[in-house]
Image (cartoon, rainbow, N blue to C red; front, side):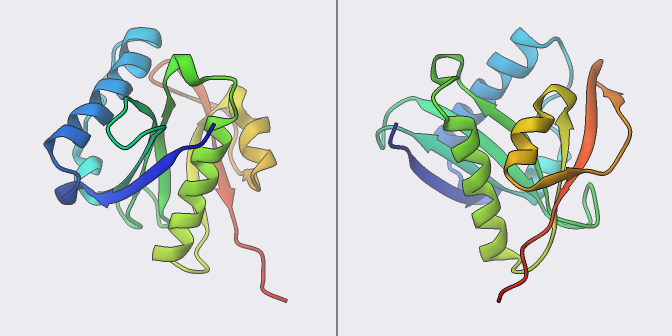
Length: 154
């Protein structure tokens, strides 16, 4: 699947892209996984990555990267979501890989932290994240903190 990525700060998303991102997050995080407060103050202090198969097509995937010092000392990837109809296509892996690439453009050489749903540790591990915490509950779902560190340049 070919995806066109857009990467923007909260203030630069535009109302339509913001609506699409929040609607997809609601569809998965609230309707599938149970109620919790999804839009939060961190959205305003983040870059947002959106993926579509066509420029004006439906949003298939999104994540946010919260600035260092807001949630963690490092930049942190969160609200990682793929539309149910796109699951199993490798889009989730491509989404996180693109998020990491964008992090390195904005914060070169900085590690990146994620609060990952525990059942996704293998996926994130395959992208270079290492588990750095014991499991904990977040919104009644087991999570672990994971840290990605850039490889030293040879």
